[in-house]
Image: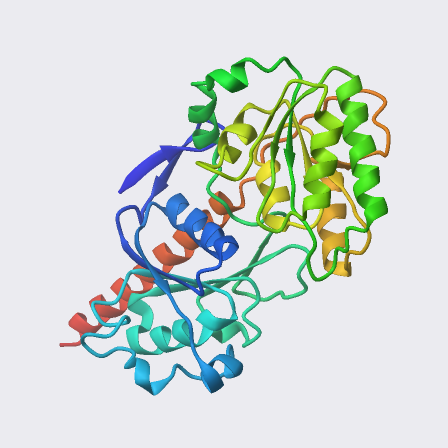
Length: 350
């Protein structure tokens, strides 16, 4: 049984450390990040199992079965015994696989689904959804942010060795994390103009910048960030070579994040540093609930069109992966005790 220290400095035992696990996703980066975050918090030794059902089987996900041609559970297939101690699935394509695994492996495998599977509470032993989601139930856990791998320990390790190019930036250092257009946020030209003005006002207050775009970042938004910070000390990642994003998170005095990404906003809130959220046109009820909850928790504030001062605020870093891991461990220990009791009772009757 392994132990580690949480963000309060206390020791947390990890009863599942070293246990085998499968992570089942369709390979999307955001899904892998969430599942790996939980697996790392548990200390699991895991295999990635990316799935890509085709044709009718893809259309039927998450409600349908696994395609017979995948030979689930048979020797030589991607999903063959020995069964893992823990399995984590996320994304609609993964749900038929976790349901099939739960049926074949029985209580010996603890199953976890991240995000609402749409197939009911019997899909897994534990279902995690963000607090802004509506699903609730006896086996449903909610947290303010999504799980990720930026634990307090990891951020402290990154901060212990500041890269030379970041050390050369004067304080306050502002990390600017760019998302982009998606199904609910439109990023009109006027939004990009507002963003440029807001970043420029931060620069006028003496800030330096560490800017990282994502694959969804449209060129007009990146150009707005470049023009706004051109006269200030900065690092602007050009998407070649290693992504400096982890170092930017660790060494930022404050952060600016676009509202379109739950994952990026949650990772920014793992730092305990002030987070300004830029809200472009659009949005949805779910996103509004998410951002309102973070503001109520004291972690974020909307980015003003003109920043008048470098206000500082603090809050306890938000670490959903640790919260999910603690719940999994408690439930797994109860199950193990229950199964042990059943075995003892069976021997007593012999």
